[in-house]
Length: 513
Ligand code: MLC
Ligand code: AMP
Image 1: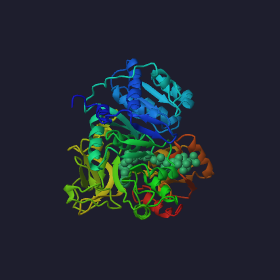
Image 2: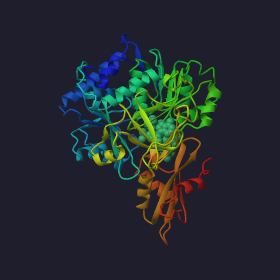
Image 3: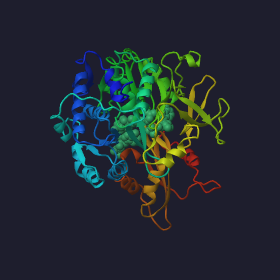
Image 4: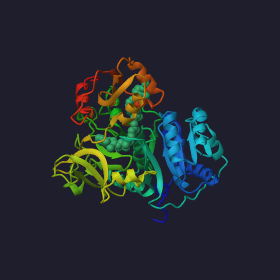
């Protein structure tokens, strides 16, 4: 390939007729393929006009909009590195990301310009633009004066395309560095594996600051020249209504449980659909079975992470590597994708016996380059033979299907968002009157799993649970706030003195169900 820039591969898949609709929004706006091409050229020209060094970071914290997608495409096109940030992040979180990534450009919502620009300018960022979800803001005002043709920057397979911050079980968040080669290879594999067809229509219902909505969904549609129906925010009724015009839906399990609560979900309403895909969190077998009963469709569950994009998938069509299996099996995440080596390793770092449980390790063209400016952390997470330690615990059954049975990392996945207890415990432990705390994940009917904070007060001190939660709210993104806080007399410990979170999870498992 003469220019391995991911944008070039996406652009090459645009349909011949550029005036066809590429994106229809829930506001009734239509964007043609020509609009995407021209608008991304204009924003790329604006980035070029700033004379930034190649591979500058462009940090973006904006509401979901087609223009935000255009900014992503323009960043790739201009040869820079896209750094998306969850809109729920508060100032302390943003200060860390901007300080760590040192972006040359920051784009934020117009309403947040005051505090975000202060953080950015303090960190040395020279360009701060605004972009609203109603096409307002300085980014588009400036881009409007730029030409609508642009030759994509030449980038190598190994050059960075994006940095996604993921929290850690200890310490601060790490920026996972994904290359043009990582993202392109994954998009190309999924194109075939999920049997995309040119006339597919994807319902895009997820946020665009994580792997699922940004890469899996957007690349999936663009690299197939397929139209998207674009929802600025997930609305179960509207999604179900749109099934009659669409063919592919992607969601985290919470989106499926919310749609199951709608009486309009029927086999007739879902009959035009071809494929329902779930991922980012475990899909309960009850949800898998109920979806089949209510729609006649078998959800295809797949597994991935920020550091690797997609790793495994249930089959869409027969997979010759696994005896021609085409069955999507509930409770499993399917087979390693073509090109992905996956192994299950025991405590002794040796591969376990077939069928046994152990840590999942992966290797492949989709596996990231390392953590941004953290060479030691990167070295710790890779084995000598180049496998990445996912931190997920699982097994491969006799038919080759991968099952995720737990996590060795202390992580809660709530409605598809990752919440690291260590970060929340750190904040609680700094509060007056608190001796110690433990944050655990417990089952929840809507979010799958939610955090619960167990707090021990210092001798003679009073701790108000409501106060704990409200002070967390001022510091952390809203999805990280535990849904309950309980003041308890003590925490169970093992002989090494470590808090036994499994005992606490068992004790509090019925809080919400
Ligand atoms: C919102 N809240 C959450 C939450 N989302 N709390 C816990 N977990 C979540 N995921 C908070 C809100 O701030 C609010 O708090 C309260 O819960 C109720 O909010 P809501 O109105 O019901 O939430 P809503 O805005 O509808 O959002 C729910 C959601 C959203 C499920 C649509 O969380 C979502 O889009 N999730 C998808 C995340 C995702 O894309 N993950 C992919 C990661 S990539 P309050 O206090 O304000 O009332 C990845 C790799 C891979 O993992 O394999 O794909
Ligand atoms: P993130 O860091 O947001 O990319 O989250 C990645 C993590 O989500 C993985 O390491 C898994 O723990 C989890 N995950 C993703 N897909 C699935 C799935 N289908 N089933 C269970 N866990 C999943």
